[in-house]
Image 1 (cartoon, one colour):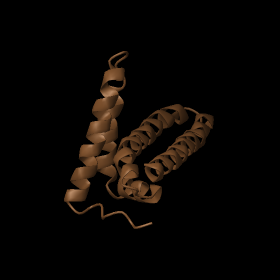
Image 2: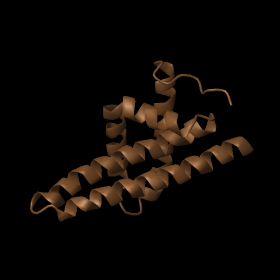
Image 3: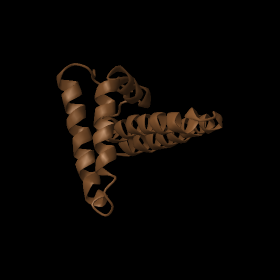
Image 4: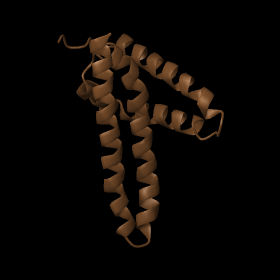
Length: 129
């Protein structure tokens, strides 16, 4: 339990740092005249969708003691799948008040995605520590 908790806490700090760094870098797009804000909207949404996929896929992976680089690796390798999953979660979380009840659905969906990735061989067993 302690190893899982420590792994999860480390992953959470890494996810928050990556989210903020990505949005800080994307904020520079606002300095581009005319197209900058439109480009920021598109890329910021895609960045958030990828981050949401990482967020909800990380919960079961941390529980099984996968390293955070393995979480990032599977999201990058299966980017279209990850963006689709992230888009679904993104839309579910738009609904005020109901999004409180949708968060457990997102956690279960991330676990199902993890199980499917393990089943199809896309995600190997975690490296022993």
